[in-house]
Amino acid sequence: MPGIEEEVVQQAGRAEAGAGTGDMSPEEFRRFGYAVIDWIASYLEDPTRWRVTPATEPGAVRDALPPSPPDEPESMSDVLEDFERLIVPATTHWNHPRFFGYFPSTGSGPGILAEALAAALNVNAMLWRTAPAATELEQHTVDWLRQLLGLPTTFRGVITDTASVSTLYALAAAREANAELRVRQDGLPGRAEIPRLRIYASEEAHSSVEKAAVTLGLGQSGLRRIPTDERFRMDPEALAAAIREDRANGILPIAVVATIATTATTAVDPVPAIADVCEREGLWLHVDAAYGGAAAVLPEMRWIFEGCDRADSLVVNPHKWFFVPVDCSALFIRRPEVLRRAFSIVPDYLTTAEDDRATNLMDYGVSLGRRFRALKLWFTLRYFGASGIADRIREHLRLARLFASWVDEHPEFERIAPVDFTLILFRHRPPQLTASRNGAAAGSDDQAAVEAALAEHNARLLEQINATGEVFLSHTRASGRYALRLAIGNLRTTEQHLAYTWELVRRIAGAT
Ligand SMILES: *Cc1c(COP(=O)(O)O)cnc(C)c1O
Image (tube, rainbow, N blue to C red; front, side, top):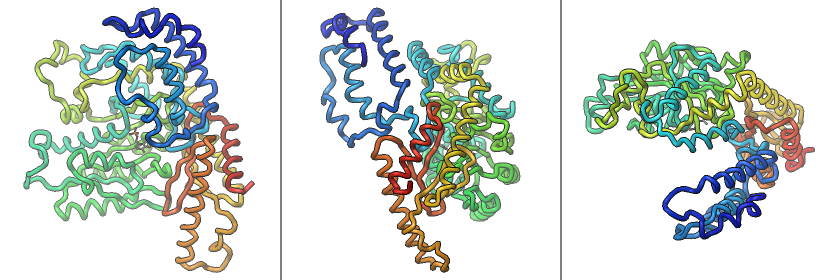
């Protein structure tokens, strides 16, 4: 940590570190606080000084750590030194401007500052009484987010840690909406009178939907995967047919999960048609817009939420493409009282005088204790403003289209899916592997062999690209085709970073 050593080593010697029975002294906190903020500022100034993904092996970090906790107090400068020596070099830098894997996330300046303050206040927002400001700021900022995304006033929001938990809560509410099943009271096991319950989502839906089915006692077979069309969107007719078939077999459908911007290819399910099916069948409609929902701040991207005013719940992650540090997910729900019914259990010691006038956030989920996540959302929304966030998201969309155009213009590369958001799926198709393209109708065996060779070639290419530590891409399969996956979404990514990456990809592929 630059500067820390000289400034503090004498004052905060081993002898006085952690001494006594209280906390760090205000003087010491101030000194190290300044040093930590200085370190963060230079870290963010140029994260490209580090490899995006570290050159480390599983177990290496643990091997470098003492096997047991320190018996005696250690000085803060030793701890910070080890942070720099052991932790930072073994970190995958999500704040690196050439982090293009999965869906990127940004620890923005305002978000980082808010996190520090939230830790300082250390409120536990279980009851309004235990955290009046955190409770009301959460209700308020999540409503700001609703307005920014153009969602209807009928939605109420709650903040959770991740989209996986938001979706779990939404589906728990969907189960509770069938109150006659008495699942809350009597559970599911051993009840012959209860039919098998089923949730529907597309083949491309996120694994969190399946985890929710497992957690809610529906099992993996409680989720039915609906086929998609050539653009990876759920086929609403196949959905309707699956529901009909299940009902005929005595299965009880309870919910449909539509996805806006799927993880593999950013496909947008046809929510209006899916909402028709849900209304006709009386099913809960949950929309997973964890990453892509952020784009709705732009008028030209509002179309993605078409039909979502008819959804029962919808999740967007401010910690993905809204520049709020991990973790922060917003669950919007039209009937919050159903979510409350699913989870609220109030022992006597948690009752308060204002229960009839105040919201107690513990009633809307599994955990009693809750972090003050709204503070970083509030800081971020205010610091950038609606127009600042829109400008940044628009720029990311521009960068994605630009990268897609480079891929399209190159004879040896091909794109695998449309670019509606900031995800580009592409692969290298070297001349020696394009046999099936040269006129003669290739048999399906040839085709399969070419696909396998292309997959192997591109997997190797990805490994070589990421091994440089200069960039980080991930991969996926779309319609059985292996694709490199480049997603844009970090605030620090510029056109130069993309140009550098494209140059590096071409060089390693031998396709300059
Ligand atoms: C990222 C993502 C998730 C999971 O998000 P977590 O917050 O990590 O749980 C779920 N669905 C979609 C569509 C996603 O993009």
